[in-house]
Image (cartoon, helix red, strand yellow):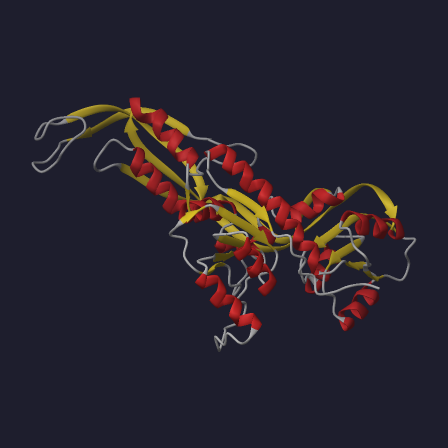
Length: 372
């Protein structure tokens, strides 16, 4: 089937929600509209004039970008300026741009997890906590013969996920009683007469962030015009999210060997190293894509043997040496791993939902640095 932009982003937001982004991170729709049919979607790390030219040439309808194209307010739309002209070109060719930045770093099965997979880092946890999400419980009453439909609808909305289990719920059978008033249009029973119906009470838990979706699914699946349901806060279950990851290699390696391994896996021409002793054995690895130097003390707290992150500042490098934490700076561009990984994910959705659409990776290298 053809794919509307709003439907695609609904799926993307379920996977990579905007609320997970760090404060003041300008994620979401930056340019254009999603209210249109999508034929071609391109994934890129950056949105630069050469990326826009590529999108125009390839008849792209939507760009999914890791780095927001408008990170700071634009003061002038001067089309003699290459940077601002690209905004006009995007609008002229009806190419929308949607950005997922720090939320892509934080989500499960996101960029930092892909880094860990690439490097063989196992048994991971987050490097620094960013969000704690509370849980709620829904109790809804439905006729017994509608219970299976209701449980299915709630599960599809994301309710009933507990750890490694999905579609968890509890049901109890009882008797529901009601008398339809004069203006009622009852599914069961007769106006003015008391009805007694065998009903199932279905209980499910869910993160509070999806409450609106759960309510919508519950109401759509319910046969009554005025469903009976309750919500309860849950104090014993929360879900935590965080930036970066910390985990372990299968076996310890000398730092020098690990540096060579990282260079090979990320296809790097060079890598900056902050370390006194390259013979030191490393096994517990901390990693944070992008500019994560400010989290190096979190790596120390997590007993990391080495920390991988980009854009390390000169004086921060001195602090890292003083604290005795080896740091590898592979640069910011390793985040380009998002391109093949997102296209792989999108193509799986295409298969699952029978979408008629093409997903492509940008072929333009936007790394501003070269090594000689």
